[in-house]
Structure formats: structure tokens, C-alpha cells
Length: 238
Image (cartoon, rainbow, N blue to C red; front, top):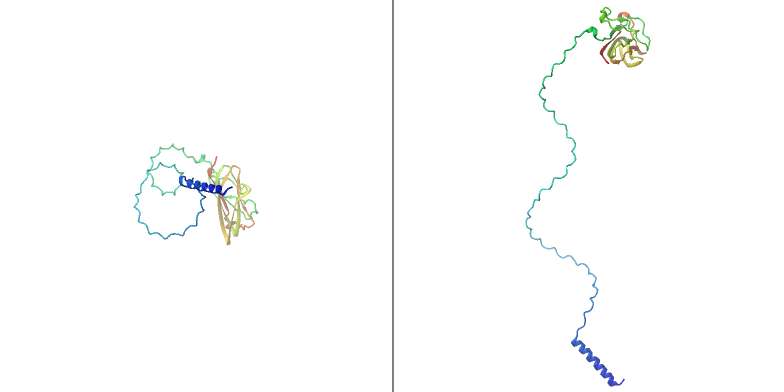
């Protein structure tokens, strides 16, 4: 290429760039990527105390709806005894009772003593062979003992008692039928008179008696003994 052509091209190129810069402006470029956060700065100095705030005005809200009823509480402590009430009105008179006739009443009783010189056998019924009141009228006579044994003829509740003379010690069994109802013992340095009693519920045909054990030293001298056995009906049962 001729040197003059090169010069012309350079002139035109320079003129074109100058005209472009004077007459037009280019488009803005794309925003760059944000940079990373910097490190935290140091804490600033403590500020001064602020002014007091205004006094608040409390406001009361509206009353709410009643809640659900809770479960019953535990029973409280027992209160003091109240004052005695006024007397009630008198009741109506009862019916007239029937005339009392002792001969129509069921009765069952006995009271015997032992007048024998020999010792009773161990674990056998003690024989009480003599009535304490033998001269009573027939209507007041009690039940007879058979070999020292009482046999129930009237169903009911009975009271029994005994007194026994012994030396040093005595142990007796109160028998209901063939079973010991209870065993009572007593002891002393010399002679003694012991006693016992019981209440028994009996049916017709039941038997009651006293039996000595091997720990009994009953006195057998007829003139100085005191062996008695008594029983009677308290009330009948149907």
C-alpha cells in the first residue's frame, strides 16, 4: 500500500473517533458484584442516661365471662357439736300389756354342790350330787343334773358359774358338749377358793359341764369343801 493511502486511513480513523466522542454517549455498564461485609467495628462509648418517661395510666379491661365449674373440693374438717334440739312431742300410749303369769314363763336353772370324798377323774365331768335348795316348791324346782352335766331343754342364752376349793393350784375346763369352751386356772401358796363364770348360747340338746385337768388339786374333805355349780336361762331364742 502507498504511503499516502496509509496516511489517509489514519486521518479518517482519528476523525471518526473524535466525532463519536463529541456527538454520542455510550450505555451504562452492568453493575458489579457486591463486595463482602467488613469486620464489626468496636463498641462505641456509653451514652448518657435518658430522661424519665411519662407516667403510664393503667387501664382496667372489661369483666370476662364466668369460667367452667371446677371439681368438688375435699371434705372439710368435722364441725363442732351443735346445740341440743328441742324435745319432741309425746308419743301415743302403747297397747296394754298382757297379765304376767310366772307359771307360763319358760324357765331353766340349776344350782348344785358336790358332797363326795373321792377326787373326780381327770378330764371327766365333775359330779355335783346335791341340790343347794332341795326344799323348794315343785313350781320353783330347777333342772336336774345327770352325772354333773346340764342338758339344755330350752333354746336360749345361759349364765353359768362355779366355786371350787383347792390346795395350791386348780385348773378347770368349762365344756360345751365335748369341746372346752374355756379353761380357767388359779394358784396360791395355801388353800384357795376359785370361781369363774361364762355366758353360753345353747340349742336344745347341748350339754355343759366342768372337768378337772392334771393341774387341779381339789380338796375332798366333806366338812371343809365348797364345790358348787350354778346355771340359769337369761332369755330364750326362737
